[in-house]
Image 1 (tube, helix red, strand yellow):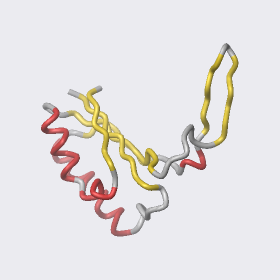
Image 2: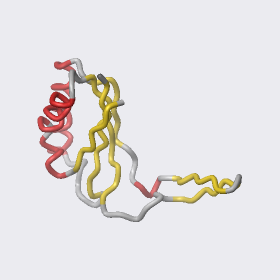
Image 3: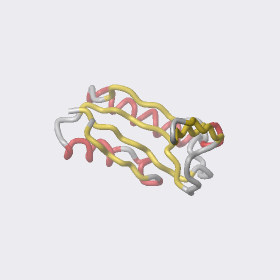
Length: 107
């Protein structure tokens, strides 16, 4: 079963340090070894976002994110998991998740 992992963190925190990148690399290797990763990516900062809304047939385009919050969607994974327990285990295995929240949903 496919699960989507939405990775939320505080945008001002340093997630691109050499140490953090090494941890992400190790996690990517783990997922490759488990043959679980379907896709995934880090997202650009929220300042690069564009919000598109359609109301009463009119399209409104706004620069920036829809909501002003401390946490932002920083990236995602789509993984093949046997069940929710395995999905939770994949999330636990990534030490970087300790500084962020991971929302897991079946796809």
